[in-house]
Amino acid sequence: MSHINTKCIQSGYNPGNGEARALPIYQSTTFKYDSVDLLGDLFDLKASGHFYTRLSNPTNEAVEIKIAELEGGVGAMVTASGQSATLISITNIAGAGDHIICASAVYGGTFNLLDVTLRKLGIDTTFVDPEISEEELNSLIRPNTKLIFGETLTNPSLVVLDIEKFAKVAHNNAIPLIIDNTFPTPILCRPFEFGADIVIHSTSKYLDGHAVVLGGVVVDSGNFDWAKSGKFPGLTTPDPSYHGVVYTESFGNQAYICKARVQLMRDLGTQMSPNTAFILNMNIETLHIRMERHCENALKVAQHLANHPKIAWINYPGLEGDKYYSLAKKYLPKGCAGVMAYGVKGGKEASKKFMEALKMASLEIHVADIRTCCLHPATTTHRQLNDQQLVECGVTPDLIRMSIGLEHVDDIIADIDQALETV
Ligand SMILES: *Cc1c(COP(=O)(O)O)cnc(C)c1O
Image (cartoon, rainbow, N blue to C red; front, side):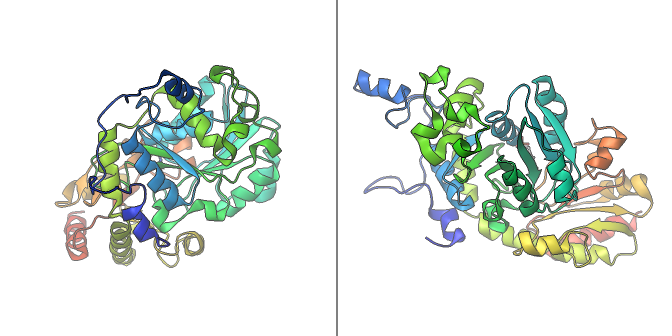
């Protein structure tokens, strides 16, 4: 199984003789045991097995193994949403009094989580321009800086992050790089190959791809040496909430993801339901085919819009001449997914009028769906941000975020053209 297309279909679940061919849904909160001592050992993490679905479940585990294999990691943990994946990925290694760095062009929900909620919990974030130089980034690292966070292909501004640059500065300072790889999915980019240490996803986007289930996942590359770094006592000294277990000693290169599960998922309880895991797994089975077509359709639409007299500007890193074209060639050689951002000539009002005139493409708070859809971030997903924050996130008042679906591309273009006629 060396090909990622095969892993989308085959990884994670291997039925034995006479067992269900498709992944079963273990719709059970709990699991039965015969031995009191074995159950005790499970609690002590001395034996492995499922005992309560808040911590693990066989259906969830199958999807976790599949996603870890797709990303090339050593372990993964699914969560209730992308937001909870981000929260756990950070708080697993940073706490009150710590500092983190985040590339400023990130998803609006990530920006709020870091800028407001994590500050209330005592974690201070410095937001940096993704174009920042290595020297400047390096100068912002403090003794208490615990990680750098960034997004491969940003929602909605479509900045392609120079992952290697951020990884280099992180590693020179003995801290990990966490990458939100939601838009590319492992089909288009595998951040571990460029030095990222932890990857998170909102599985609510392309991994589900059908706009039916919310979810998230944290994936551990197994590459970061927590003990050598010396900056992460939570992983390298006894955990009093788990009978003094030392994660790096008991779990080796899976220390990070094991701690996330047995400590944070135990305490925070943001688990994915097994029903959701089943649907997510089924939809990942076609991920490789869907991504190929999303990329193909989006490039054709972007090329059409780039030459359209009523379009003021367009960002799609797959377009020759786009600011991020060369970074996209490096990090996203197979394509840039289906999301693009553009403005209609005439500014915010013209962009709004255009969106309301679309007949097939729907106006909705979502992206990365098989159905073409669009949204106006400045009045919706990014509404809580002030003008300065909007600029930092790369969101202009006229920005239309459009997610190109899997309909026939001629129908998508025809719909856009008729709506542009009305402006
Ligand atoms: C949607 C999204 C999130 C948040 O995910 P939810 O599943 O909605 O909680 C995080 N990062 C990116 C890039 C996203 O697009």
